Amino acid sequence: MKMIKTDELLKLGWALAEEEARGLGAPSIEPEHFLLAALKIADEEFPSQLDKLDIDSVRWKAICKDAVRLRGYLDVLPNKIAEVRRRLRHRLARTANQPIADDVHIHRSRKTLAAFFDAQTHLEGEVLSLLQLMKSMFELEFLEVIDMRWRGQTQTFH
Image (cartoon, rainbow, N blue to C red; front, side, top):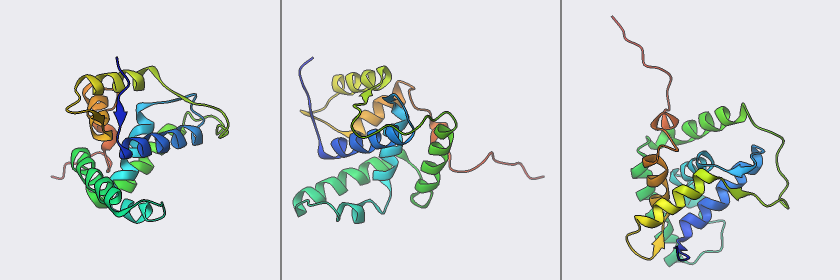
């Protein structure tokens, strides 16, 4: 398959996913690491974090617009995104190893590579987006909707 271009949000998400994998001592970047990254990007605080980067206003607006589309797809209440992210990170930390140094190269896992391949086959244009990658990860069942749960089990009141 030919080399596909990735959009700015996917590049940023990839960097964040690698950071998550490193922090958890994961030997490879898994779909859950991309979900953690996507949740950071979907957070309403994301635009203020972008202000710290040297990005021109046109790119900033495009990235923010794509982040809003991603938030809509993930379908988490905006005020619960941080809680979902903490819960998922806590679950992953149960099996975490020592953090991995920045100078050690971490590759994508087989599942993550398969999701990239799937996303490329469903590409609607020339540029692969983080949104398309997340759709592939959920559709391939590499991620589960339960990963998006922000509250405990519901209780039935009589």
